[in-house]
Image 1 (spheres, rainbow, N blue to C red):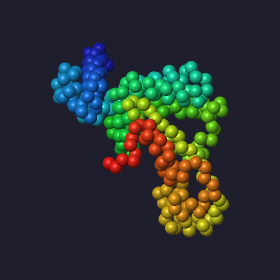
Image 2: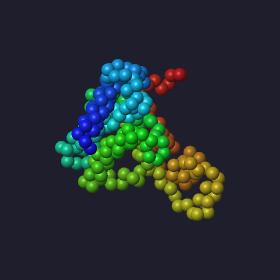
Image 3: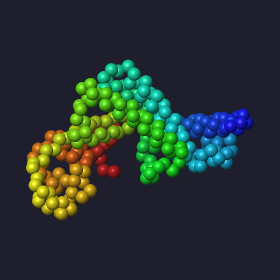
Amino acid sequence: MSELAQRREEEKEQRRAEIIDAAEAVYAIVGWDAATIDQVARKARLSRALVYVYFKDKQDLHFAIVERALEDLHRRFREAVVAPKTGIAKVEAIGRAYVRYARETPHYFDACSQFQAYQAGEGAAADPNEEACLAASRQVHGVLVEALRTGMQDGTIRADLENPLMTAIALWDVGQLRQVLSTSYVTFRAIDESECRRYWAGGEPLGKAGAYAIQGRGAVFVSRLEGSFSGVMGLPLFETAALLDAAGVRRWEAP
């Protein structure tokens, strides 16, 4: 690459970064739903048309902000796990880092939340900025996975985490994570092949997690249940109600 071409490329990267800076500033003030490309252009002191040269639409620009947000979160997670020695201590440190992240950079936290809710298409990402977000997200998740594996190896986290039926529910309120873990163990009696085939033929197992319905005829197979019946069905209501109460949601009032 010639010196001139390199300088032009650097200028393009600088201009792109300036647009993202402006978008972040607008995001932090009015929120992403209310933000417009015109506002971003005015903040960056650029024409609206030039913003579209770098980002094809508002969603594309949002991806660029999410990438930054995830890179910051990844940095915080990596720093959080340096000092703790055990796996569980590392997981707890990650949780505290996440809460600080939400409080200190609420627009980043909101950007990540919106990205998680975004339904990406099947296969490879259609946009380079979207693919960059996915790659950054994998890095963030990798820190937590590493901490969990450390805990499973050192004994501070159970080694059989894959076996229990676990449902993690999270509610977000003013940048604060509230979560509870519902763990249930379901024990089946012995079932012969003929009985399995008859149950399958009735259609109830289709589309069910575990291929049975504890609230239906599948209950005849269950010899023991430890934990939440509603959680096995799909949503642990006791824990969910407690989270809603903590978030100030009035559950008994009609809409």
